[in-house]
Structures are given as structure tokens and as C-alpha cells.
Image (cartoon, rainbow, N blue to C red; front, side, top):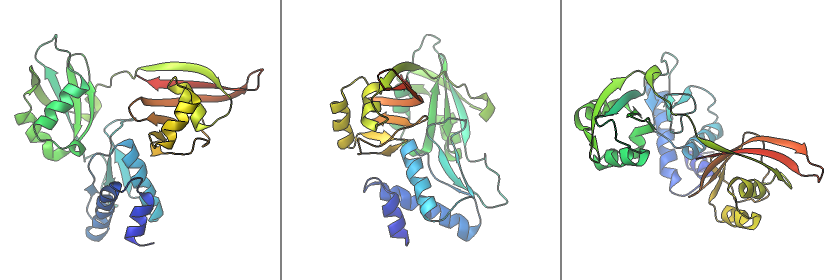
Length: 260
């Protein structure tokens, strides 16, 4: 399979092909020159496409996904020769709010960065705490952040570099849903997780607005399992924590965590 076919097979949308071409470029550069190479930060969907591309190309090792901490949503994909060690492709910064009463959100902070001309794939997760926010970034932006990022909206910031182990990870907020499903189908799971009719869920799936484990799925009858991540564009994300055990009416018990 040639390069064009590999990319076309892994891409979910036509516009994804440019991203996957860049991923393949990074891998080929590492192979030719024997140096570490790294992509920008990838969303979970982009990560799945990149891994599908590498599998199709027969690449099984020599790369690592890293977002700075376990469970990071946005991660870079680093290709490493045998002599290189993982963990040096990221920097970590803390933006402390000078006003202790300030209540900045993820959107406020990301908006201020975009206003400074920072491209989204140069920044990983933004971890917001009551009085500060921790940022995962590419090393090339370290000095820029320390020198230029002075405020978010009207709130002044003091930006310092921190260590990976100093990241403050906010507690994940979820709503636990315990219910039953008539069958372990995608449409039934989406309907339960996002409080809608099964018909509406099927409509969203058919429109390409639903992802199963970060990959768009348009098959309403696709089976789901424990650990499956459900994403609905515009509504959020949920995880199937447990699935199994029949009720007296023959329905499957399910526990779902919907992220708030």
C-alpha cells in the first residue's frame, strides 16, 4: 500500500489527510535522519487516526503519545530512535491569577492564547484550578509564554515554568447514570447517556455526529462494551463503566459516567 492509500484509509474526513501526511512525514524523518521528531498536540480523534495510519504502515514501536500526565486528552506523538528517551518533548507552565477572586475558565484562557496568535496544536491540556491554570506546551513556546502571556481578559497573570510532577490535576466531574438497555447497541447507549429518544440518537449517529472511542461511527447497531467512550458533537462525552447482568425483563444493566 503506497503513501496516498495509507492516508486515505486512515482519514475520517477529507481534511484529515493533511494532518496524517504530516504524521507520516515525522515518522519518515526519524527513519531517514535518526533524530527524534514530534507532532503537534492531537485531539483524541486525531490520535486514533494517527495510530490507525501507523498500524496500516506496519509501524508497531518507536513512538509514544504524551500529554504530560496520565489521562491527558490532547497528546503529541513522538517518534524516537533507539538512543532517545521519551519525556523531553513538552514543557509545563503555571499561570497564577493575580486577583485571588478571579474566576477564569478554560475558554477564557484558551481565548487569550489564541488572541496572542498561538496555534491550537502548539498547546495541550489547560488545567484550571481556583487560583491558577497549568499549561502543557511545546518547548518552542516556553520563552514566549514567560515573556508575553500577561493576562487573560482583565485578569493579570504571573507565568512560571514548573515540573511535570507539579501539574495540578482538577478532579474530573461526572454524573453517574444507572439504567438498563434493551441491547448493547450504539443508539441505545447514546440515548441513555444523553437523555434522548433512541430515534433521536439514531438520527445523530446517521448524521456523523457520534463517535465511538473517538472514531466517527454511523452504524446505529454497532455493539458497545465496557470502557467504550461515547462522544456526541455539541453534547459532550460519556463512558460506559459497566455493562451486563440481565434484569427480570431481560434488559442489560448499564452504568455510564457522563462528563460535566
